[in-house]
Amino acid sequence: MTLTAGEAAVDSNAYFMGNCKKIIQTRAYTTKGLQTMGFQVLDSKANFIFAKKEGICGAYLYQKLKQEGILIRHFDKDRIAAYNRITIGTMEQMEHFLFTVKKIIGR
Image 1: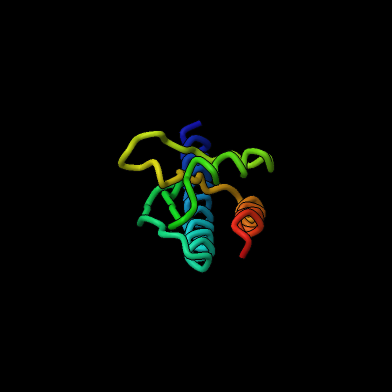
Image 2: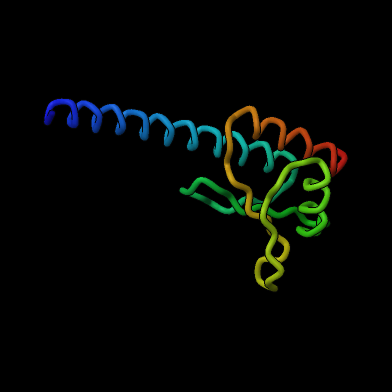
C-alpha cells in the first residue's frame, strides 16, 4: 500500500508540473499576443495576468468579451479600473481570446 501511495504521489507531481509548464507557456503566449496589440501587461507568475490598453476602457473590453461568451474580470476600483484580470486557460482558449480581442479593438 505504501508503494502504491508513493507511485500516486510521483504521478500527481508529474501531472502538476506538466500543468504548471503549460500555464507558463500559455501565459507567455497570451502576454506576447496582447503586447503585440499595444496592451500593457503586468508581470505575472500566476495563472492570470492584468492587462490594459490606452484608449480602451477596461469595462468596455469586459462587456464586449462577455457578449462574445468570454469572461474576464474587471474591477471598478480607481487604481485598477483600466485593467482587466485575464485567467490563463488552455492554448486553444487563449488563441480564441486573442482573436476576439483583436476583432474588438479593430487590429
